[in-house]
Image (cartoon, rainbow, N blue to C red; front, side):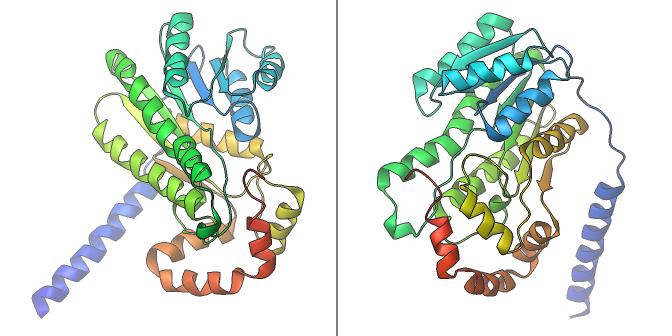
Length: 301
């Protein structure tokens, strides 16, 4: 009995010292963005567009990837005053041939890929039994398959250079399971697991991976009345520019993971990890007809 207690308290103390060391560890800049080639998926709007501005302002060479060529060209014109090297690659990254074309065209234009930003994603809300099977498959391909496959295509080129940076834009829902967002939550949990496993796999290769977990953000994916409902329930919506700057700062500092959001989000992540039954009770009160109606509006209509 005494030995068991000693082992338990040794584990607790060791864990506390580990987290204290991580908290107090001085940060150092691992990346200078000037002249770096940065590929950004989902770059036509929202967080992706904001990331394009953030990288361009730091004189990076930016590759804009999304399906809508008109929107991509608009972003290109907006960021050109900051950097003359902008490549537009219209692509549906859920398709293998178009995904490969992103890598091929970038290498043809610049000869290398220094930073890969897996940002493209979509929302799908509502009860599981009401979801269309085709939409489920499409969301999983966009939110999870595409970043995995694109990273798989890019990593060999980074390994050849013994250097590279991967920035995965996940979601706070990759840490806290939300009802009525089942498929989206599953995709973001998958991206989190992929990021953590790949980071360990690439340890010592010169390739670094940062996972960013934003909260609800003002983007085209959130209708105005849904934003009103979220704010009514106490959620603070972030601006895409603020998310992009925080993500880029985490990348430059070499952070493994950063959670972006107010106290409510961070408390939810902590509760989910250590006292999940509290979150189960919380969601029983949150899933009202008003909340359900709001979640049903997320995704293609």
